[in-house]
Image 1: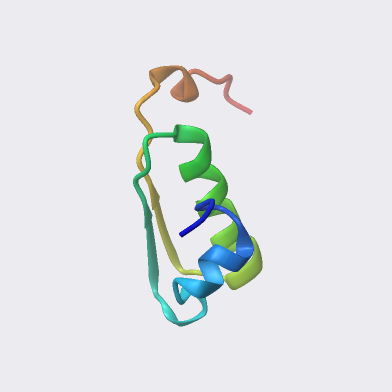
Image 2: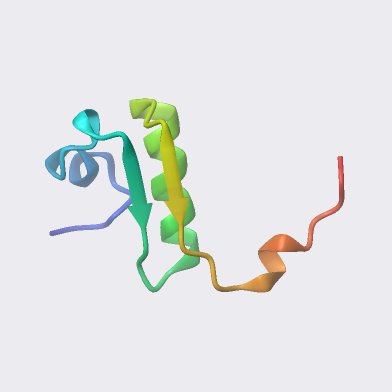
Length: 62
C-alpha cells in the first residue's frame, strides 16, 4: 500500500512487466500522475486514467 503515483509503489505493483495501467482512484490528479509516470519511467504502452472533472477537457487547441 502507498501513494499510487509513487515510483516505488508502481514498481511494487509490477509496472515493469505490464502492458496496461488502469488508474482509477478517487483523485483525478493521482490518476493522471500515475499514467504520466508509467509512460515516462516505464514506457507502459497503454495508460487509462479515470477523470471525472470535465474542466480537464476545457483547454485551448495548440
